[in-house]
Image 1 (spheres, rainbow, N blue to C red):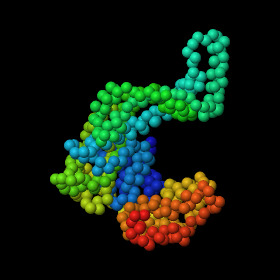
Image 2: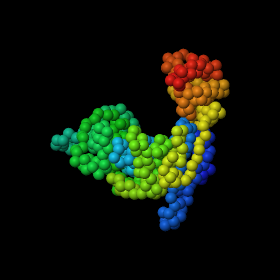
Image 3: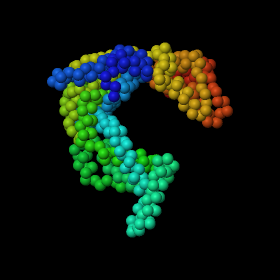
Image 4: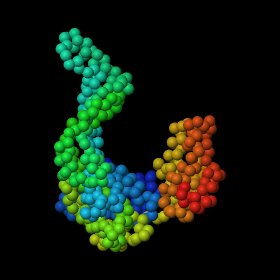
Length: 442
């Protein structure tokens, strides 16, 4: 975990994936560094310093979610993205607002478990090898004389050598799996959310489902590695570590917060908008949420809220809730030059992705500077004429440009293709000319 990165280092890393939006990058970088600073202080003082939550304001597709997601991955923090509209106040259909902290804890537990599995990886591998040999050479279950035992041991050692040499990876074996019933899946299908206390009770009551599966040795190794690693990990210690990780470094990205802004209505789908805000308030302020793994305090969880606020404004939120987001940054609308940079600059740019995908078919694609400029121009014009969806428009346009090439790539004899300005214009001409058609196609 890179928890000691300086704000400048954080911004430099974010610049590799997100174009522009410097104000938002600075805000999140400072917030993360302040966490590190707080942990350097005496415990009594550290407890008094609350997280400076952030409100991002800007149209869709300009990088709000990407900044938060990349930030969490950069510092190794548990991260959860939720939409404010999926929650409703108690008494109306929807999820309990506190469930976002429980979901974040599940993310934290998975992270700690993966790290714990890495620490016991070599020890678990020894047991996995023996279990694989048991599957490859099942016990006869009957009496064996000394000669039969010696022969069996020689065969087992021969299999062990082959296993270590990777010669049995495709050999089929039968393995018995045991799976506990997933209560959320069972009741979620009926549109019900089960309380975690009832969920735990039901899981204990219902028997585990045992099933014999046929799989290759390589698949069985992965399954058994996870199983043996779980046996070596202390679950209570794991849960404590996960709770500590979530409380000190967790990030919740609360998207579409503008959809719950505004006055409460007496009827209709927006009846509980202020109810959601009221339920959010204690969690964002700092409270203790009860989970099946133990209590979790939300005082130092970083909340990053985001919304377009096209039909409302931040001041339409409850003053108490708005006050819990002291840092507010506005993300700018993307222009043509931004699209050119998005297509070419990031480490995972769309053009690099396209080139690498087609290279798997043996097709070498080259983009001219004019082609990139043409794609950016079309994206910018279509966003202005129709609904502005920001950089997401580039995905649609690139797919349109490469539709024929992608379809014919496995069979084409032309293995070197140059994408020019003229080719892009030719592919987009019919759609861009027809404004009505572009609304539906692009």
